[in-house]
Length: 92
Image 1 (cartoon, helix red, strand yellow):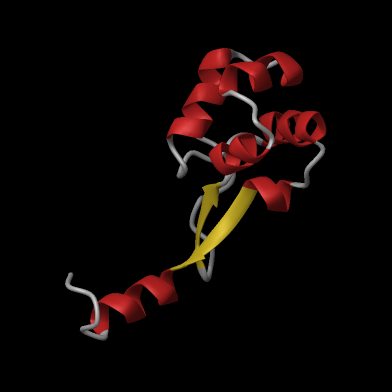
Image 2 (cartoon, one colour):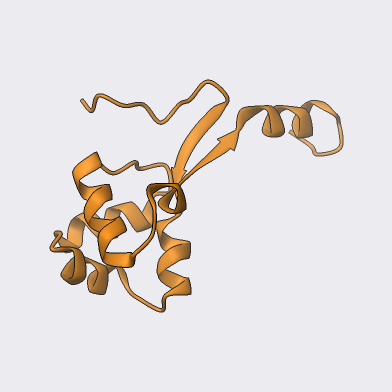
């Protein structure tokens, strides 16, 4: 079990890797070669935005894509989600 959690005090972490790869016109396989990672690892991270890579994997991704960890990982506020649903504007 990793020592970090996808849930923060104000929301939850999600990875933005698929979007970054689209912007850079790269596939998950190309990233696996650039970052010296398993293609299975990069495919899993791209396919599941709630999968948070380990710090070592995150570092390799950031160095390979020349981005910061904050570009790869984002925080989705749970407040935004609960207000939208509870307001009656959006059906639950």
